[in-house]
Image (tube, rainbow, N blue to C red):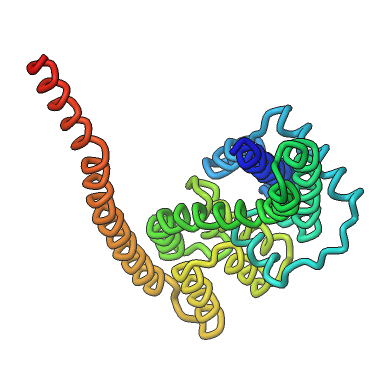
Length: 304
């Protein structure tokens, strides 16, 4: 039992190590991306989205030192592990800045695996009885190697939830800006500057890329990759149709905003419906046994 606890502790440590490495890289890359993509006129007074991004990427000095050590371990190990084909897509969906490449994630995975293997050899192998030690020693680096993938998946799910919550308001604001006569690029930039949230930050980055001369199709492809939601994909398709046919974008944005609000209302209702069984389970497993124990204690006290 003690060996199993030590093995689980080593796996958790490896997972946290991988997460810290990715977080540190994300913080450094986000700072560089803000310096290159923000409008110089708004650099001194960043919008709400920029402040939210800075707060989300803040890391302490201990985490940064640990991340630097793990990065060195992963790169010096030089494990010839091929990167999965969909890793770039998962990195984009998780919202990591563009400077974070697939090689950085693979270095994090290698460093986490090496640290997990070293921890298992030192802590688990001498204490585990029989054949359990070698088995757990082999499982620990696998857990460390997969830990960054699990973190990416969890971050992508949370980010998708935040994007879906922001989508109706962002679409409405973009519709108002377009109806007021602003071009699409200026409308995206204005919404990105004045509204917080991850979706507004992505719109601002997209508008900044267009202003820097990046082709609109390439900038929209990046937006679709980093925000793989049906509503965002529909927004990208509406912008392309408007550019192709020269039609007004405002009616399409109004329809998309209405659909996004209906989807958000259904999501809230589904979340509330799932909460009721959880409450009943907590009552059945905790409150009812506690009440029965109190009643039994009163009966025993009365009999004695």
